[in-house]
Image (cartoon, rainbow, N blue to C red):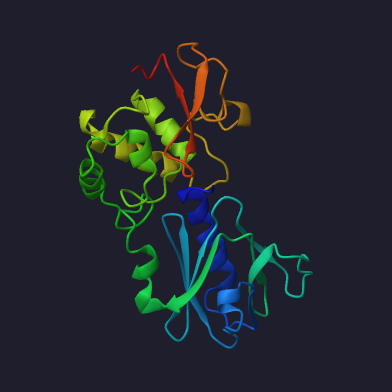
Length: 259
């Protein structure tokens, strides 16, 4: 699933393509909004909120999308061929370009004043202008018996982190993923590190946490199951966290992140 930095970059691409331009076509290919038509309305801006995208248009309306596991937004030339089938679930076009929302996990059209119904539950956005590490720590501490691995992925605590940054952040702090939140003294340092990792990757595609942009050297543990730890040589472990059907991949080094 694209994480906060990737969604932030997607918002920037949509702003570049749509902001300040009048829509010449809008095509909602989801049953709930199949009859909606935004043609003739100006796009005001697109914002990212954690892993959510909010495209605000003239008339007090907001198009809400979420990429989930496989979704993406692609910007193409006006009149470009739209792929057949059901992959494209939303089209927003102006005279200069067309934005194709492919395999979007969520598509909603709401009044802008009602955006909170969709994103109001989210915790502080790691990449937002209102990032508040103290509030993120407060939310984490509300469930001291929860594992830190599960708590970090809960977007109600802090918005934008996913399986990659969870694994990398916990490795760099030397924390076993199943350790209880209440047992971790420096939660502030933990969430601040997560924020810095995401922010460091804002300007380029891909996730780099080691400082080495070569694909084979970009991460410490993620994508390296069974391979030796870059620090201690212990083989990287792989497992799942969370209850079904919400379990998610977790990777860690048993040497650097002891129980």
